[in-house]
Amino acid sequence: MLKNRITFKVKGLNQERALNNISKKVKIFNFKREDEKNSQFEVELKDTKEIKKLIENQGLEIVSISHRGFFYNLKKAFLRYGIIAGIIISLIFYLVQFNLVLKIEVWGGESAECQEVKSFVKDNMNSNFKSNISTDNLEIMIRNNFDFVSSVSVAIVGQSLIINLNPAVLPNEMGDDFQPIVSEYDGMITEINLIQGTLNVNEGDIVQKGDVLVLPYTTDADGTVYQVQPKAEIYANVWISATASHYDYRIESTRTGNLFTNVEVLLGDLVIYSNTQEVNFEEYEIKSYTEDLTKNLILPLKLRKTTYYEIETKEIISNFDDVKEDKIAEARQKALIFLQENDIIISENYYISEGAGCHIVSYTITTNKNIGE
Image 1 (cartoon, rainbow, N blue to C red):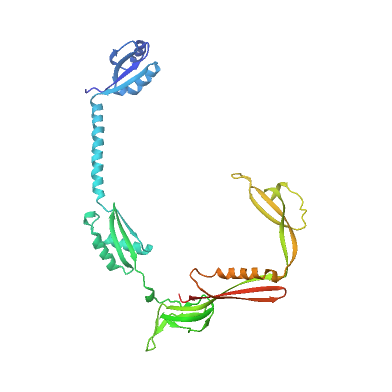
Image 2 (cartoon, helix red, strand yellow; image 1 turned 90 degrees about the vertical axis):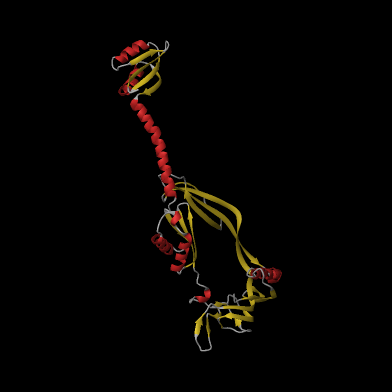
């Protein structure tokens, strides 16, 4: 068992001659012939590489290789028990480090705020062991030390300490940058319910889009002015208008449907191929575009297509009375677009103006809505 030898089992013909040639260069031990084609022998461990080459050079086939000896058994035992020891050590290390918090993450705030909270927690953690960390105490400490935090939750997830911040939001009423309520419509005010602020209009007033309705401050009995968020319900009969025009005489250009396309191949700005024809249309429109001829080419070849559309121009003379109802309906539809879903129409009317061969239908819809929102 102390001798370190390798046992080779080989297969092939004329083994005696082959082994005689091998034994001249490498010492062979315990030769055994199993049958006509198979035999086995031993060599010293140090001759392993050389014997393999000699066997191949003699035309023999290696069937198997086995080891024995003190050093081989020692190596095998070391590998076997070393793997087991490695597994045990890794398991112990994992169990120890699993009980540690290795990372702190802060969510929910601005970047600078999160970093500030993260640094604070690091400085106030006495230990990284999970069992020594009180998430309840950390929540209290964060709330007590940071005004920008309204509420906070701290939890240990895996090996991370997760801190979720809910930033404190300053109520609108406690700010100092308030804007007045401004009308977005033209109309006449019918009802006012002031909640907060200073009125700038009265019932019955006519207002236009952009007029200030409620100012962002209030004044007490002593004349002291306080900035506040203006709030009010201000109802008004709102006028929503739209127009439609008709010309008694006009010129229109339309496409006839006739067209053709010219094609050119460009190398940079140079035309290297073209398939074009002359334009025989009296009137036409042009649409042109250029695109890469092929992709992944060194040469910048491009394809330019130009399409010519034939058009014809007509003089159109029409009487407004023939299309009057259509124009009124057109103007009404344009006005209806600006109404919201729950708006109730109070009244509708239209007015027709005429001048220089043009008739303009102005359609107005009156609805009552809260313009103080």
